[in-house]
Amino acid sequence: MTDLLYSEEEEALRAAVRDLLTDHCAAADVITRTESDAPHDRALWKSLTEGMGLAGLLVPEERGGQGASHRETAVVLEELGRAVAPVPYLTSAVVATEALLACGDDELLGQLASGRTIGALAVGLHKGPGADLGTVRVENGTLHGELTGVADAAVADVLLVPAADGGLYAVTADAATVTPQTSLDLTRPVATVRLDGAPGRRLGDAEPAVRRALRAAAGLLASEQLGVADWALTETVRYLKERRQFDRPVGGFQALKHRLAQLWLEVVNLRAAARAAADALATGEDTDITVAVAQAYAAPVAVHATEEALQLHGGTGMTWEHPVHLYLKRAKADSIAYGMAGAHREALAQLVDLQAP
Image (tube, rainbow, N blue to C red):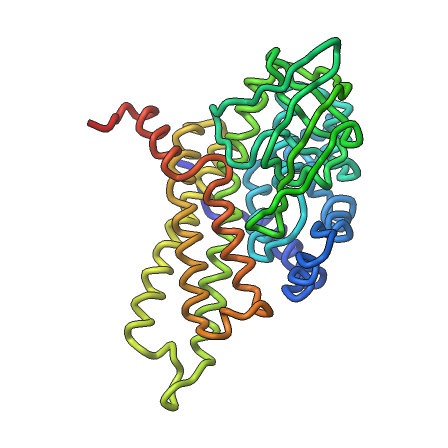
């Protein structure tokens, strides 16, 4: 039977990542960065990748990576979720990397594993496994078309573009026109990518590569959502212990205890679902079903946890200076990323042959 508990190595990795984020990703700094023209924290990205080697966790050692698994990657994403860190880890170290692993392009894969090159799969953030891949045309060896809602395209060095001819092409970012779009989650900006005669190098077949990438994205996104929900619960409990009304801690009121108890149960269940998805991706056992279960459950819990955090912080939670709005926006944006919960429930029903009447 699979052990979903964290191993000693995973706990050590968590501690190292949390220490780094505590020192270099303070909430006030993240808020300030979202108000600037450069929301991505490149210095933090360099520390995570070149300093700790985290961009190559999913890449085998013989191909330039760390040779770890999705379980370790999930731990990193939990901590990045807890800090709403404005770095392209999910999009580059998971999504783009998984697509390249399917194609077998070792040169570009090694560049992404080092962290010196950032990749982005040119598929809308809202698209889940099995979604339509777009209509980018290939004419005389160049790519033509427009893709919207591409996460972290503004910071990418290379774009992986699925085309209508069935191929997946590598396009340098400077060969495309990347226009920022208004994004709810200011820590993970999206953009429109326009290709007007951009040269591209064919990497392999798009369909299996993109399906693999989006499945891993959906499964590991649950760990990021776990980090967001866990922060919301922890900070809310801490605040309610300190906030006093009628000369007693607000957290002592029975009605609030009930809300927090319910939220705790949801977060515990989310942890189990997220860990199961990461383990299934690592072992290859019942992967589609486990990922669908995790994403069907994760989004509502993360949104509920952050909504409760904002409400239970009272007037303080409504201020721009308090970071809870960053977590609510991340939870809301994640709820439509890589397939909505309803889409994953429908996919799960098909996988277990339990169709609606």
